Image (cartoon, rainbow, N blue to C red; front, side):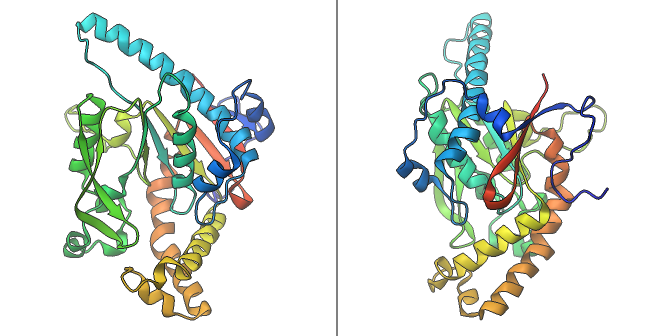
Length: 323
């Protein structure tokens, strides 16, 4: 049976490393976790084409925030014990959550919702969110390397800088600096930075953050981003569905941000509807779908938790890695 990008389902899941839950089963795991977001909060956290509902937050993301709260608490206890052993009284390090998946699958919205929910738990009120887009090579460098048509592929990132950032954050360094990416300008913004100063939780959103390092020669360590994660989430959906969401987002941007003459993609606002549709489909097939198939989808089984989406970005199934 061909893999169309959706979570694989088999009659016998005995050998699967995951325990799977229907939406109803997962929602029941919320237990007595209070709903801490208002309707207005949820609306503000929604994406351009992904309108998150209160019921989605209540049934999917509240149980997930409860699970992550338990993980963070356990990690904090373990870290305190290790700090005591090492006689290190200033050893605070963030609990890092990796968030992976295709372009247009809804990572940014999921990240914002989780950030808002996790920050409302009393034992980890400081929750930061950062996207790895800032670690893309600037356009001038991508053009020099012939990689503009492979933007978002692993080779289009400054991996050394990204790894250095992750290592410093995990080591508990103060004021770790990350570059800033603008989707409006479609480029890294010179001189602009995000500063991460030892939050309780850091959510790292990126296309390829679960990609493993190549096998080392001679047993030497080759670190990768996922080595620094305490928990990882993969957003999953059928390829055709994600492609449709990408085109829908492109067409919406064409009517909004692309109309600004300063926007990198301003030229697309002048296309006819038919031309814009074809352009969006071409970009999806030639760049983003290729990246999904080659680099992103193969990392799905490395995640600790998989959220499978269906129509309207609704999560219909959750898979949690067995301990």
